[in-house]
Amino acid sequence: MKRVSNLLKSLSKNRRKGLAWLIDPEKTNSVPQFSWLKESPLDLILVGGSGLVASVFEEAIQSLKPLAGEIPICIFPGSHLQLSPNADAILFMSLISGRNPEFLISQQVKAAPQVAEMGLEVLPTGYLLVNGGELLSVHSVSQTLPLSNGDIDLVRATALAGKFLGMRYFYLDAGSGARVPVSPSIIAEVKRSVNCPLIVGGGLNSPEKVRAAYEAGADLVVIGNAIEKDPGFLAEVLDVKQSYNFIEY
Image (cartoon, rainbow, N blue to C red):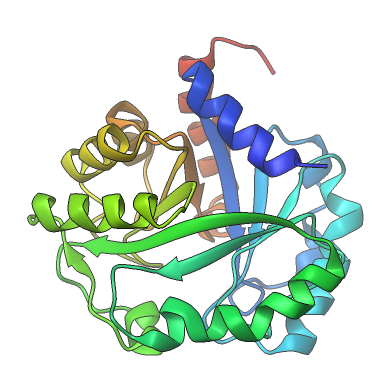
């Protein structure tokens, strides 16, 4: 059952907007406290983190599953150790913005046999780190530098290369805790060039920034632990999403 791919394709095709929450179990106080998840209008839950070990990751997935209800849980892997048969899907990502073979292909080779055995829905995803020059934890772990918000031509060429290599989904990420998100001009150019479902995250810590990402062409916006710090933030962002989709919750 291709729940997540159908979701992303539907958002892109129908020009609707989706919202995902990225949960890093290392940065949350307690997964079981999220009893409100089942009733929320979130479209997707992503689980992952750059430093998670396998046991912590699996425990988080198992704890989230009964809380998520009908909301799909998708793996946002930081390494080949972050896999679980209890998830619904996996963003099978290649870090195409960097040149470190470990995250271009090596981690994927290590994960592939287990992913096949688990029967996870697989989403071939081109992952691009793009920001205003900040070096964050994701850059340290991946041993790569982000592409610049100011270098539209290079970002566009990188995304196109991913498309020509067969990637069907794209994720533009400024990095967790980024002060400056991916610029609207970058989002718009990548969306125009690849014409594929586009996910955007990192640094989207205000309704204004979320709206700017949607306006530029993001199909699915990802917000992080700002929800836990300020539960009211989720309501604000959902209002932004609602204004594009014209539906009532």
